[in-house]
Image (cartoon, rainbow, N blue to C red; front, top):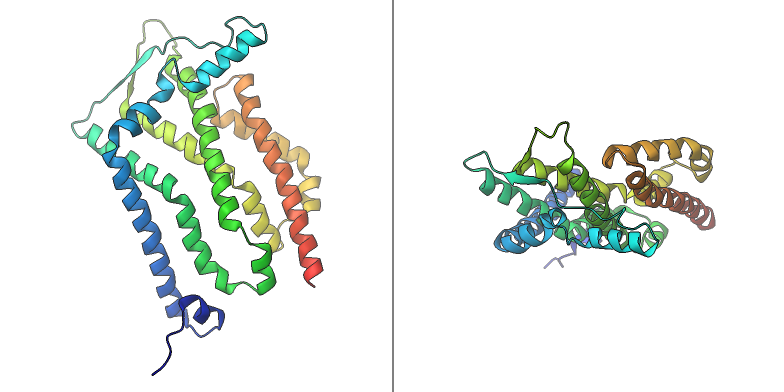
Length: 277
């Protein structure tokens, strides 16, 4: 009787055809999507916490970010300069199934965020057998670092970018005669887009790692175009934040730090490649 060979071992030995590789990939994707669906259902069941506590948190005056800004303002002798007032808008639903479809949509987004480490793990399990032993050695911890960067970006987007955007856009008026009654879907789409976009932007060091591995990016290239990158990051910060200098600086600083980390990552990849040879 032929001994069954584990999936990873078979891929490492190069004994699988193209269609067999597709079949393996399919099952990795099935498990990843299943994890998103299961955690999405969990988020759906905990509707009160997800919506009242998490997503609608930036609408409340006692939200953590607003309290910290007000405390910092008073601590540095700025009086109430950074203390944000009451939100001058309310959310409305104008569609019969609007609240239900929003509930489902947000639950799936929550499932994706919660399952992200496992999704990366499944993709890594598929990619790993195709790497050389020295490449696996240097790529150890990839799932951990990718997950940490994404979660850090999500938290940064939720606690920094989203509250500032909600406060500015929700309270902005072209005239006192125009009242802000914001559609439920518009609010949640804006919030989820900002948070997910920030989580993905924080993956820059990982992206640079792979671009360096395939020879597209080098640390010298990153250093040469540092000034151009500063301008690009400033533009990006201006796009994803309200149009005020303080918000843009809050976003610019961590993105610039990530860029410098990416330069170090690129240099480390080339150095390890030379040592391996």
